[in-house]
Image (tube, rainbow, N blue to C red):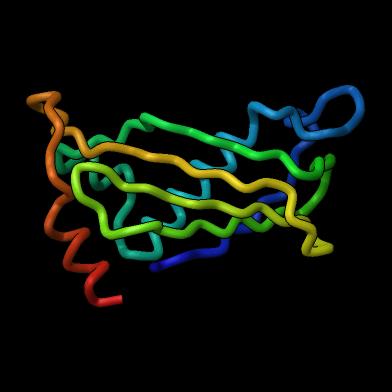
Length: 133
């Protein structure tokens, strides 16, 4: 399935006293990977929200293998696991500049109509674009 690669540099404020990335910050890195994955398809979260679609995270799983440090350049590989339905599931791998695997993770998000606050199927524009890939 479609995957993207996003690079980010670890900022000082994202680390603890040992210069190691604080574990809670990885959720933000995964979000960055997801938003860039979507942007590469031609959409943005902002555009989807303006078109009555919200995507709350309902599941997050992270396996920490090696630490990342201040000023490391990280590469987030974001992969769609399967064609979306009412949910969309991503798999992630985060690497440092030495290509060491630091983190593996998965997230599941659901599609919610922002007006009715009810679950909905993935929008047709997203499904159609994914079928083109």
